[in-house]
Length: 198
Picture 1 (cartoon, rainbow, N blue to C red):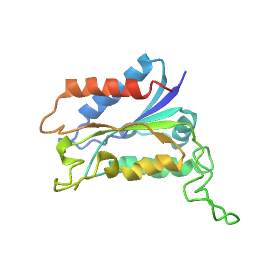
Picture 2: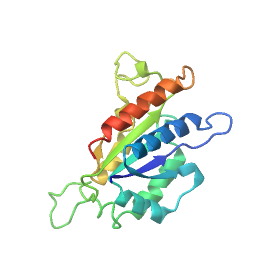
Picture 3: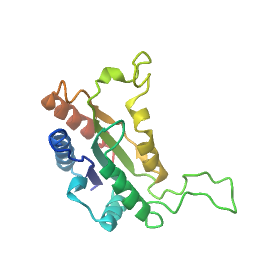
Picture 4: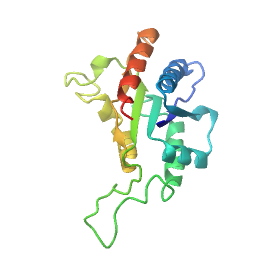
């Protein structure tokens, strides 16, 4: 039975971002994966976590599912704290040996020390931005860049562990034009289809 470690990276901001949509999407993903026969462990970062237990959950998982809002073009700072603590604790403890380079062999490239080869990850994001803001050079802010371009650093953090990217899920315009039912249905299909081959 494939093991999935699901992380809800939402950070609550009272009166502004209470996390209902991220929780709804997170729960939909966890329930969909469970219904498909996956063994799912879950961490809700806003509720706290144990660093050692998180390292072990990542090491033991066949795949990771990460649900997060996008705050000011990035992840909530509490998730960055999680990465600093958990990912650093995983160096030499199952996530990676180190950065992959050696003094005796300079041909080894930076970032090749990952120990999670064959494992996969999926990022699911919620945006205030509309879908039209991405992938269009005529748009003012992102200037033709994609959702994955925006979160490139997070992709590289998982790649540092030698993990393989599954297609990113994104919910757009969630503050001005929310359609929760349709978004949940789309998320369930996306998760079911993309985790099917584990």
